[in-house]
Length: 220
Length: 220
DNA sequence: TCGCTTTTTCACGATTTGTTCACGCGTTAG
DNA sequence: CTAACGCGTGAACAAATCGTGAAAAAGCGA
Image (cartoon, rainbow over all chains, first blue to last red; front, top):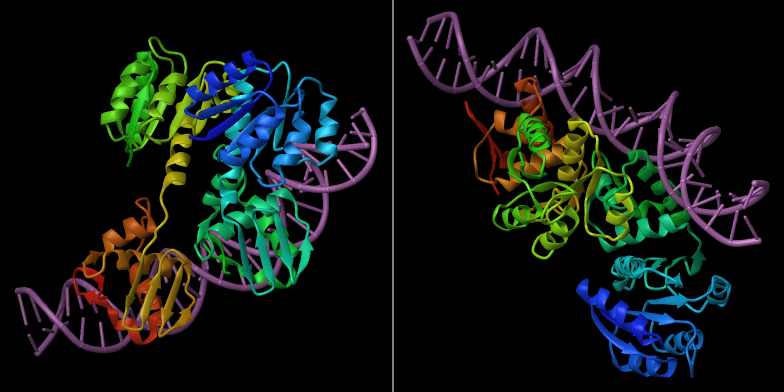
């Protein structure tokens, strides 16, 4: 399923996580400090890294900073204290998620699944059409070179349409793929978000085409 | 309509669900525990599986995990307790929907309908003949390179004929496949839409051939 | 908790689309 | 030859869809 690097100085924790992850069908490597983690991240092509914050030699925080210099691999942090939260996110290290100790292995597995699910569509990098630039990897959208700020749903909606550019997408498909298979909501919800998305796209609002009786598509 | 596998250790529940589902036009098989379900899912080509969580031998949760190893068939879970919710969804087992007991059979049927509708695959192909181009994925039709705008019914009608190009289609078939099995309307309705479609196709209007006493076909 | 942002719901109206139906014309069967 | 039938058509009427704004609900950080 995915190749995972588990970084923690406590062997017990590494082992538990590894067992669970392998049961889920993932392939796992282990590292016991930040230095090891950085060098392994360089060579091994990991889909995700799970890292403890407090470790000897190089702590998780600086390890991620190092790793970020050459890779954008998703990282999930393990932290003993809630206070770490601020440090991690306040410094914008680029962590995808974090779990506080003590944690249940199940919880960590759920985070892994979630992160993998999220990072899957991010593989298609960037699309440019006229003055409209959609940078999925960096989660940026530019209209005539100027960055546009959008809400999360707007990004997701736009990215999904962009991944399927030129293809007719029904509201059902949108709800199921952008909102999630367990979303049971109003069809108008899609319309409303399309409205906002169009408004964000300004002069390129017509790139999003309404297919009456069906749904929408984006023409790029 | 669809082939359904119903899995529950209580015969009473199986019977009720089966009756309702068959009334809806579905074909049903039954299994009374997780082991049976897994092996039946392997051989039988089910469109959807409805499964209880609590069962002897192999519970619904692990049964789905097993089934997921070889199939992505949609699964709807039945559960006695709301607390199961977290377990199912938090762990990302790959369940499509979830109903808590006690449930009304109608509710389950509604979920089935919703899941089936979602998993319906999108049309993909594209057909070109002379100067007539039919792009089903993008919902486009071009006459000599120029895009033609049509109404939803026109697209659907044309696409259905195109998928069956060269084959005679009766009005009954058209009504039941383009309009829906539950449409009880006038035969002239088809004629009217054929008229509009021909008008949209301009010089290629004769690609749609009337088969007197039978119906229509498209020649591409 | 409060206040702000984002998401979702919902009802309304403008507009597009779908359906019915009667009539005319050509074809076919008797 | 002619009556019945099948089809095309236009126009009236009925229904559905979409965009929108406003308000409720949910989420989220301080």
